[in-house]
Length: 554
Image (cartoon, rainbow, N blue to C red; front, side, top):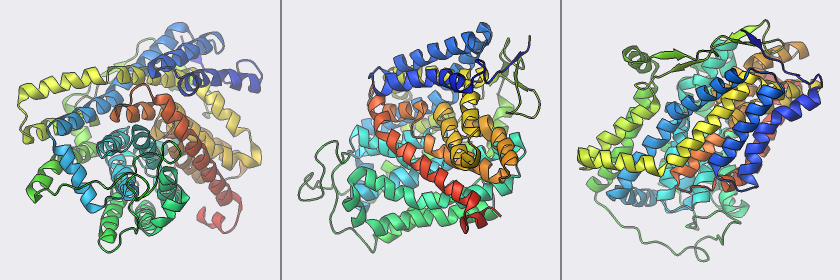
């Protein structure tokens, strides 16, 4: 039996939208204000989503259950698999002391915590976003920052804020390639348009990051380093996206940014060294002389430093190789069984105006274990562990200890992905998207927020582009706007939702071992997410209507 989605089940768009928002509101309120543990908040949101889908949208109960099951499986692989294995690697490096040497080597470049954030959270994180995506950059950078001594909230929240500007291009351009492939956009044109939106924010976000951490005065003390970081990322981001393509935008821009920042630090250092590791306003935080006492930096031999960085270099190589399309194709050819979800696959139809004609929704779970990024991380951890002189028995023991450590985080990810997948198949997320689409001349602003909403709900810019990319095209045509502008806005606006999606927050709390504090992280980053999304919406509106910004569209 085919079930067709209905986007206004109550024949009143206001009421339908309010009811469609209930599952997300339940989860966010439980997490952010009632201080529920993350897995309980996610479970409550999932129950609410099941009730709304079955009793308001008239989705068959068995279909709703199967959609939630499909999401839960996706939560384990690929997302949970990444989190588990990056924590496994971090555990190994901490246990044998190499992480302490890595910490000292970074302090040798600069002791200033603000510049460490630029180097690790922004530039190094952007590299992992470009190579792997799917939560990897937040997991890696948050783990490194907590090892460097940053407070859990600082390490978590700032890693999430930094992981914005690179997200639109994601793992080797996957979000943009998917947008073009699924909804018929010209790949190079929509890539170029994103490349005319994000560079402005690639310069802004490093400033925003340091302001969020240390305040305006402390930010201005290192403005030359921030400017070098942002501009050296933004210029390659623009050039590669406009003249080469989406695949290597983040990787090239991140490498150039890191090299330029390190080179700049050879000729410039801040007058005051900021050694505080807590967020401004959360604990007493001042610069040198009023804050944390200077820490004696242990000098290590070159060979010790190389050994300490080797596991992370191995990780970088494996993640990059695993992200290559040719490697993924080869590994999927060896083992990648697909399991159509019986009772769900091709039994749900998306309906106009989201699509031009009724379109069946596939529901296939692919067990691409070999090609999953998490598998590359696991292999890198094993190789790195052997290099660090662990024996196989110790590696296996530490792996099972890691499973125990992250057990509740994995459960939370499963429940949150179940919630997000159910909202997609029931059509409740589309109801929310249509509410944004009915804003007339203000649509460039609210259409950008639609992308933000899509990532906040699904945790993925790719998923948001699949969900709302077609709607953006239809609405743009009806309003006389450029479809490429709004398709790009969906992806560019979506990046600002990445820091509040439940999946990313759980990854950050797990990487920093700050379990059951997901609500604290959400409350901290929520303002930054909304503010940056609105700024992106204003910028897209200027592109749509105002000279000279409008010249970027043509």
